[in-house]
Length: 340
Image (cartoon, rainbow, N blue to C red; front, side, top):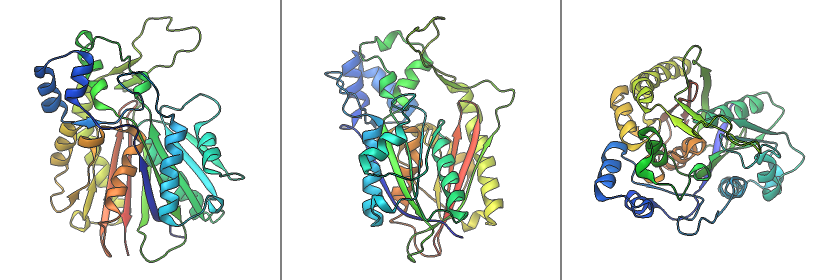
């Protein structure tokens, strides 16, 4: 039984914020802006927190409901027709209740299996793979798959950014907030591309995490550890090679040659890192589908933003590959899409 991507919807909170706007808020100078533009290569991002007032514009469940509603509308699918729901995030609104249940509440979805996967950048593909397998099994017909993150809630808007260690400064610039959603279905309308492959593989045995986001309860931060740490050098060193390994495995699993690929959806770590990864992959015949320079790295929403850009472009007979690497504990993931 084949599974098709019927439609995609996305949602971003607030207006785009440039590096210059961040510099003005945190009291840095033009040299800092130039460094951010050149070294990071991400120009804008959208945050769920208003920089001026500190007001939270939306929670993850609210943004998920917006993205999910847009995907359902685009697919001409009513909430009551959804058979299963999956959400991937590394930043849920609360430990319980699960954010997927609160998003379902706002969408009017009930009496269906609902799954929440907690993971970093590979989580969206974990969700796609899980939904695909559930649909292939024949027990369900239509799945609403969501991925998103709210990173702004981990940022102290009153901090002195000039005093941060380089790794924490990079983390502040890399990420934005957003949610994406896809409607997967076993029904083939002749237009929707097929989700041919999706795989996820942990490869972190014996390797230190390159990103850690801590959670502190009522007891507080007892050991004084930083709330967010990032080994950007390890990411730079490992992600291009891991992306090439994912690409090779996807081609093998799908039975495709490099020349068969029309579109490449590469990892969206930052504008500059994505450039390096695409160059390393050397898939010169494929059109790149990227969003990171405008949205920043939106974590588990990223593949959906790329799919949203892909769907209007992919024509009959064309094929696309998506690649994502999670550096928190080194997870490789990828997916393949083809239109008949």
